[in-house]
Length: 327
Ligand code: GTR
Image 1 (cartoon, helix red, strand yellow):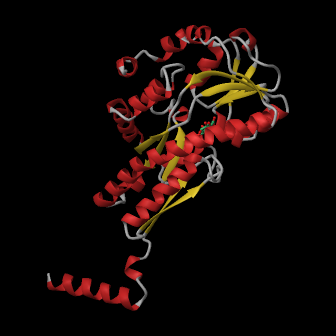
Image 2 (image 1 turned 45 degrees about the horizontal axis):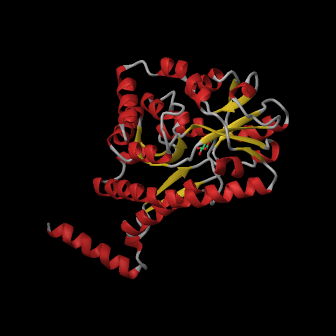
Image 3 (image 1 turned 90 degrees about the vertical axis):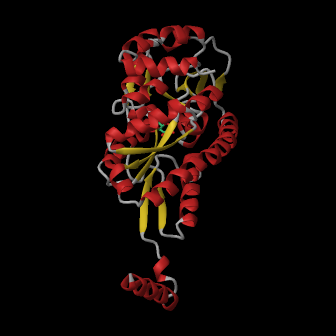
């Protein structure tokens, strides 16, 4: 006891003598994001970093590596599982082939609205999905928003489902996304996000699908000016931590990180709303032709085989029926 006291006193003294050395940063967590600096997800994780820094007296810092500096999502997910990357903000799409539960909230038209999605992700279903990451060497911290995804292409305005026939669209590397595009009569080309711009430019693909902020920040609108708001997917994003990095934190620090991650969600949603409007304005001003009126029913009907293919296990059936039963 005495010894410990002496040690603590010595540490405190050295902190005074050496300019707060005892409070020096001890842990730096590397966090990955495919989006550029300023994008709502990047800013939300920076905000989370500030909260954590403040609440740990500067012991824990979070460094956000934006713009895919650490790699494309599929690869950074593997590196996060391996403990090479500590934290990762990704779409749930690239998780579909790894964490089965994420498929339930990546099904086309499974959410009736953004409010419906919030209700599901903020409640017990969201908690169950976050927990599912643990079996895959990850800790699910929070879900972020991603608006709704729609098709854009370089060739022609898509005014009905028939216009999609035979066209080639890049999709996230997920079997659900591939099945969805193929079920619409188009051809799915799974490809990393960073390769899409030049693939459209060189005609390897006709287009892709995404939300307003991604369509804008990726500059895909420069090469694919036809955007049709069919809103086939409202797929949330997730912030995960490597289980290996998580286990190195004390229980107290884990609680701080978890709480701060939850708090960053409101911040993210506010940033998202502003960015969505700004991105829409940017691409419209740049001359994108947007089809806003489209009959979604044929799109919804075409998704039946996708549900048959993916909603098979009891786990998925249960999740999907709980989502559908959420008001
Ligand atoms: C964006 C999402 C990214 C990435 C990208 C893609 O909406 O925020 O994490 O998944 O889509 O299509 O690859």
